[in-house]
Image 1 (cartoon, rainbow, N blue to C red):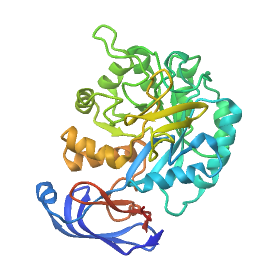
Image 2 (image 1 turned 45 degrees about the horizontal axis):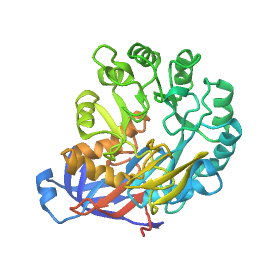
Image 3 (image 1 turned 90 degrees about the vertical axis):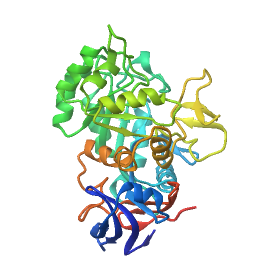
Length: 376
């Protein structure tokens, strides 16, 4: 990475767009923002650069041919690829796996979670997606589901920080553990679940705060059996959605946008992201990239090849969101969900995580904690 002292253009602040300069401090935080207010209409009509908060992706399995579960330096390659697409911080996401596989993956993640790496997104910690999920809603997860274990969670957390846990509340004693997990500082969200509407509502009352890849791998909405989707639409403040336009129909995303105040986007990207068509690894599974998606041999969607800059473009171009609203859903709301008041927004004192786009919303520059990422 190389240091910059400022970024110029149309800067999206919490109060709206400003045409001016964002000044970077030597400490990697934003020192000041100067300029004059400008409307979003003027921003979209102009050829000046657009400066948005860096993207935050809370669900990343892989990229650039590397899978988080393979260990070694895989996470650095993954974080580097996603940084090139504007992601400035992420959660490395594990798969449902035997204890030995999780132990090895966490041990490999520890150094990258502890300190930033050059030309890479900041790895804030781990999203433990499973193994505490339903065997009947594995989706593309390998078949190693089991009830939640405090011993296992504490052992893994000692290796690398767990920031988010996906679980199915109906499995074993999972629901009873949610309150204690939340009391210990873990964020809990519901996913890969056959749970009923009532079980979803009960889990939210216990302290769960989100839903993993809404609509996918969970009990669907029916007018007499609202399911886990119904619990999310009726009661959630936060939920993640994969806006690659394969996992969820645009109409369903629109419904969720109306119902869930802080619906935010994730990629659920796999090792196939940024790679040509072919076979890749997803945990212990082999998956195939073709026709813009990733699937198991039986045709089941298995993560994605989505990048967060493409997610932004899909929100604006296909779904018709304003640029300011779309920015919140690829950055600010994920930060809010994780309790990160100094990321996901461009304001003095926040980390200088920013992405610079042209009028077509293509990435031109990326800064992670004030350091410019070397793009391809």
